[in-house]
Length: 237
Ligand code: SAM
Image (cartoon, rainbow, N blue to C red; front, side):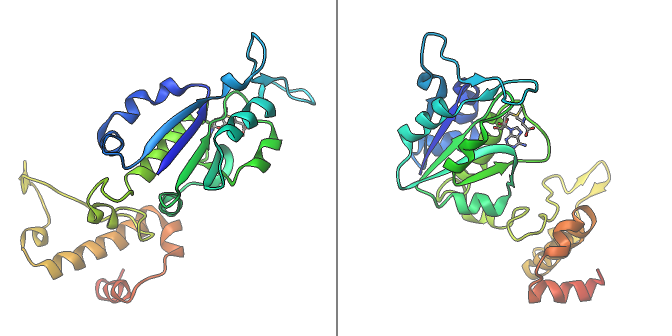
């Protein structure tokens, strides 16, 4: 998979792309990330990429011409283009699963007051990583790249992502590691039992319980499997 990031600040990505799972995956060639400096497409000596908003108001707006020329320099019929924006569709694990199947992902990073609204018609989707405003789209792009790259085959063991939070619409069950007793705080007995069926049942039960408590919004729209329905009944959740 190839990922192209259109940005004014490619230097922000340096450590991120060399670290941990993303770093290893890129080194192994599972994905390739390239950058296009939007300013390279701005004309004149001053290379202005932004201008004042029509109708007045504070801040500057990124202009169509440099952004769209930069986009058109890399876009092909296999590309899927995302524009990062607080007004975009909320990003989630399901979207990451969809995006990890794309051949070529292009991510556009806005800055200042954002982009000229006409640019929206030249992308496949506007994506928001949450209901808050960032200074630029670079952190949002890193969130998208991280969540997509770790899903690529070979990035991590398949089973590591299968049971993670949000994969099946629920939060993950609590995890524990050694020691089994930390200053009197004990790991649940069932996890030490070696009984895989019981451990699975406990984990599903915990996952349902946690989601109900912490994310009632997810719990309400979850479609329960037969196994989950049985466990709900058994534990009276
Ligand atoms: N004036 C814009 C508004 O009120 O919607 C905010 C612009 S923001 C300061 C600059 C850029 O940061 C945006 O163009 C976008 O690329 C990025 N950005 C900010 N918040 C974001 C979010 N929650 N999700 C994705 N991108 C975001």
